[in-house]
Length: 117
Image: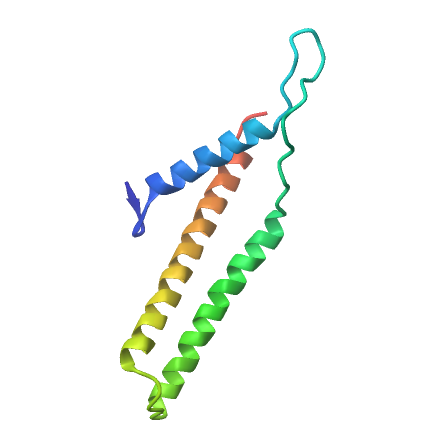
C-alpha cells in the first residue's frame, strides 16, 4: 500500500527489523531463574542524535540545491541545468521522506496515547 508516494511495506519491514533487533538485545532468561549470557552486547544508538543527523542531511541537501540554483540563475558557466534539477529533486525527495517519517512517528505516538492501560 502506498502512503503519500512512499510504499508502506518498506516501512513495515523496517519496523519488523527493529523489533527483531530489540528482541535480540534482550538478555535470554534461563528457565531456572538466571539470565543467560549473550554473545555480544548491542551498541546503543541515541535517537536524538540520529534524528538530528538526518535533519542536518536534509537541510544541507536543500541548501546546496538552493546555492546551485542561484549560481545557475546568475549565469555561472560551471553549473549545468541538469545538475541544478538533480540536486533539487534529491532535496525534494529527502524532504518528502522526512515528512513521511514524521507522520509515522506522530501516528505511532497517537496510537500509544490512545492505548488502554
